[in-house]
Image (cartoon, rainbow, N blue to C red):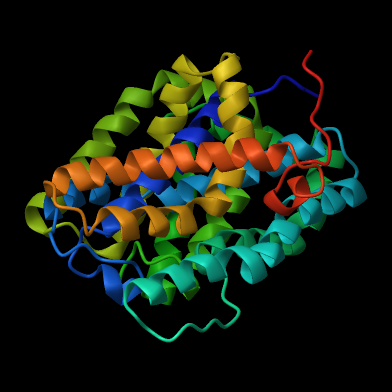
Amino acid sequence: MDTNRRHDIDWLRVIAIGLLLIYHIAIIFQPWAMFIGFIRSDEMLEILWKPMTLINVWRIPFLFYVSGMGVYFAMRKRTVGQLLADRALRILVPYLFGIVAIVPLHFLIFQNYYHQPLSYFAHPAHLWFLGNIVIYISLLFAIFNYLMKHPENKFRAFLQKVMSKVWGPMLVIPFFIAEVLLIKPDIFSLYAQTMHGYGIGFLAFFFGFILVYTGAPLWNTLLKWRWVYALLAFAFAGFRLMYFQGSSPNYLMAIESNVWIFALFGFGYKYLNRPSKLLSYLSAGAYPIYIIHMFVLYGAASFILPLSMPVMLKFILTVLVTLITCIVLFEAIKRIRILRPLFGMSFTVKPKL
């Protein structure tokens, strides 16, 4: 079984989490920010929302794809028991800790900013993603374990045959179309704690595992046809923006979401599958920074928004302050052994090879 590390997937995960941070900051400068519990700027930057709509259709499904792939890579060197213990430590513990110790911080910052009574009830907030993964692993680990124990089977042979064709990866798309037709979400990109979010996350997580389980034929296809998938993605996005003001019918959004993801995997495999010290650092920091970024973001916004300066400068400054503060906090957390597992890290730092 191939045990080579896939640096391109590590890079794509880091980039996706970086985009998530910028996306959340962009929400602050939209007129509807308070409706979803964000601090809102009095000055708008609605121009930011055009590029955000381009990533919003794929950003969360992409992270679920990558999470499913991560389970495959984890299972190459672990038994089922070891996998479940590892995922409990890395996902369930930060999830539960976050609900009682991290999420309250940005709730309280929001309430203080708007002079509301301080209160809190148990809520996953942005950590809903981790809760979903716990559910998916619980439901799917038996299937994944069977596939890992029987690597040479007819199902894998079938996958390797069809995934060697340009249309092979497209075979997963009807499942995503069926999901939106069945659940009928009002807004395709409303993933957090919705039935649609659970459904699309489950499919992306499952197919993330299946695609990487397929092996080289799949990655050769994504590499060879990456420009086709990219052109399809831009075509669907352009059609959506021109004719549907940013939100096309859900079945078209499901297609667009996946062709974006196939293109990203193809270009990542081409250009990013190489190690670097920067990747090692960012990969180690991405998960803890994801966990803490919301209260840092709210704190930065509450300080920067009242300042007298151009609104674009406020946005840029909020991004920089949030990112730098998150990195400083990550540096502090990783040095305190007892805190490490609370933020998804092992108790000890692995020695450099």
